[in-house]
Length: 403
Image (cartoon, rainbow, N blue to C red):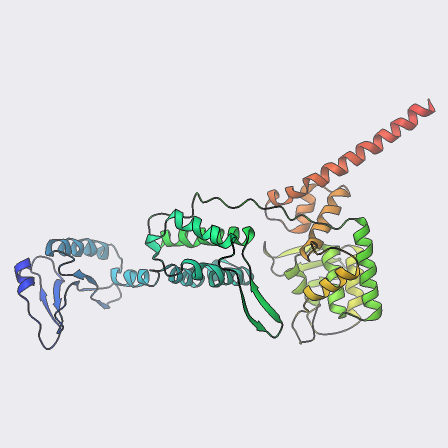
């Protein structure tokens, strides 16, 4: 029969679910449950042959005409190849921000990002995104909500101390830097939400990041001298593992990233050509030339023996931890705590530019994907040019004085 309001209102519960099918739209019907619920549904078969019965909505919340119109719309989508029921189930899995975050990790991050980046995203989701607004509906999040989350992270609302692990305390921190990293993560999460049909717009667009102080700290000549002496003492007195000392030296002499150095294996090194073949890096696989200082470090460390991993720690085939040895060696060298391990990469790059290498050359050595990244060292290039200009002026002075 044709479904009408009168028919729907008159339907009474039975011992089991039953459906009153509509004679106007094929597959459209009203399901009546033993509890008395009346729900509009659509029956169809997917392209794979599976039977589907998605719910359109409850009688009362929907009129018969509204439900019939939705059924017609869905049938048109089904005819074009869509599986409406499967799509709705997928959308329900991402109804809240926490569920969207979980889907982002499995459906996007694992397919497009490197393990280290995935781990960072997961930590930011668990430490900041979910605690601050994970229960909110994805469709209800506004730009004002994103701005509030940004301010909350800066103010330390999500900062806390976690239970200690065997290797020490765990502290979740806030601040401008973390807030900016979370903003970038949220921007991609909500871009995925738009692609997946969970909402029409990205609420993160237009939310400004905090201005951050550039972290271009590098070691000056005196600090480099003190650092190399401290490394020699640690080597001589055996206060640190040989792999830790070699690792710090390689960071200084190659400009490689920490993860790139820790992942090096002996078969990555071509001693004859003086190169390292990085199997994977932030910018993909690449070959890095080695200077004499780095080659000496590798040759000396090779004599110690060990496994396939160059910087092997106390556990077989596990890289040595460099953070705590760096703190101790840094203190021994009298270098302040603004210098972290990444500062050694900046040191290599800064002194390369000040030695006369062009920005594109330094960018190639560092493995920068974008020339824009290398522009942070442009000031050092100008310092070097001024030095060369002054050397030329000295020559002129000598000529003038002799004349």
